Length: 153
Image (cartoon, rainbow, N blue to C red; front, side, top):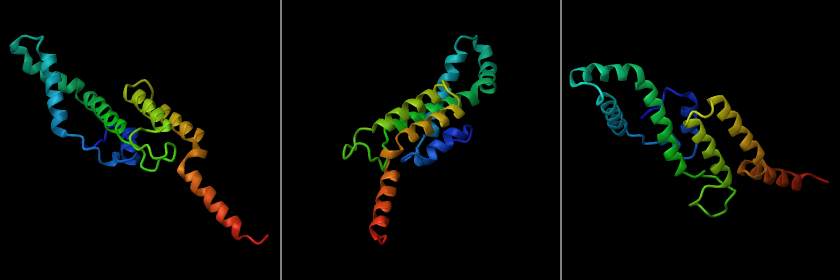
C-alpha cells in the first residue's frame, strides 16, 4: 500500500532500512476495513445497514486508513534493523539501543501520542545524542586520521 496521507510516515518508510519496500497488502487492509465496517453496522437494523456503511466510509475511512498505515509500518519496522548499525557489533538479530528508542518514538507517533513535528524533533535529538557512535562519525574520524598522516609535519 502506497502511503500518501501522512508525509512524516512516507518519509520514514522511504529512508529507514528496508522500509522503502514495506509490502503493505492492499487486500489485507481492505479485509480489515470491511470487518471494521461490519462491526459498526451490526448494531443497526438490517434495513439501515447499507446507509450506515456508507456513512462510516464517509466519516471514518480516511482516518482508518491513516491509522492502519501507521500500525502496519511500525509492525514492519520493528522487525527491521539498521543496515549499517555500528552499535551492536555482530548481533544482527537484535536492534541496537538507538533503534530501540527510535521504535518507541515511532510507536508513540503511530498512536497519535505525539505530532509529526514532535516525532521529527525527538528523532533528531536521539540521533544527535549518539552521533559519535554512529557509522558516519566513525568514517569521518578515519578520513581525518588518514589525512593527518599525510600532512607534512
